[in-house]
Length: 291
Length: 246
Image (cartoon, rainbow over all chains, first blue to last red; front, top):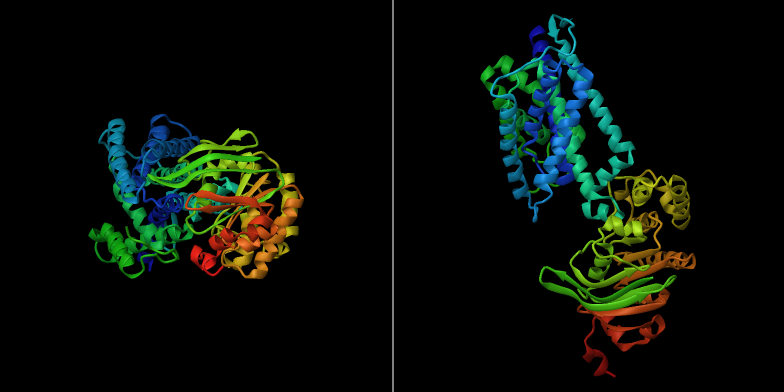
């Protein structure tokens, strides 16, 4: 029992991170029908930026966190402006290959700035782990959960209450119609890129204290987030959250009860299963198309 | 108000509108009729900024519309009710209407927008009953009313409608045409693209008949209604059907 609970805690912690990454994928897919395979690299930038600001420049956590979000969001917008928007004939496949190229490019940038070493930083608060029925819950896990919950609630409100959020939904539903109505769709896409990559930065910055961060960390995190988004249903906010937690927990159980070699395999086996059985994901309703 | 001179529109290398000139005066309902593929929708797309690939001249209230994107055209006072309605199904009726006023929220015209919301719901009381419902759950006629309402929320000076009667019951078509007449009486200028020429010409002041990208006939609505060529274009019959029999 105690063991299960311990695995569960670790699963929920990882799951929360996958969820945030998945939300980034989902959001961008919604606004642009594009899978950004460079998304994981923005997570990496978030983690390393956070470590540099807080451990390197000894900045206070809150401003460091906010600056990281803003900087990575700005990088995401720059990416849209320089690499995505200028494409003359934007076909899905072309754009996706551009994002793959961008992921390699960003990894290179990461290596140039931070070198090949791995870094870490102290947890957000120095509390000792909380004891729950014999299992230990790290203070950082609590932080991660709180941050993820706040963020999700914020996004939900943004989409439901603000005019800009509704305009973004309108863009996602029918870009041409939104354009006719007078919504500047290009600006909405730019905003979606900024928000999605800032979301990635949040994921990176939150896990920086409980993992070793290096320039190459983004690839696997990005893929996990992608799996989570597919699992929950691409394009749905709640689907992404659900998929993230589900993936995290299943992964932790697999590692605990079967073999630690299974950790990364879990995600991809799940991805394959979803694609075979229910390509629209658990809560997805949208028609799925191949291209 | 709107003046188009020698407009040529291109889809790649294909010319879909081949040198059309027309003018719309303040407070008129102008009707563009013609068969499928005769260039009516293309012309509207060019006016709205959806189709940037055109030559010639489009002037609205003395300003050229060249190189304006759709949001800029909306801000200049032209709203389009697009073919197929293109409402946002998952969003509520209220949100759909609010988004129609998107360009004006940026100018902090909240009070005026509230007034316009009143005006639109007075024209289409059914929309008010459905405010919180997702727009996708509305019937076809209600969706068309929503599309018109959404366009009006931008407070346009010129309203363009593309096939508003498509797929609707005659009673609903009548209702929508009635609303257009009310709007004209309030000073709104309207350009109506219709395949249902009978219904459209009944309320229009003047009309233009399109055929394969050119205007083949123009004149007062009454004249056009009586014209043999119009009957042919509208009914899609061959010249032979009319002239041989007659």
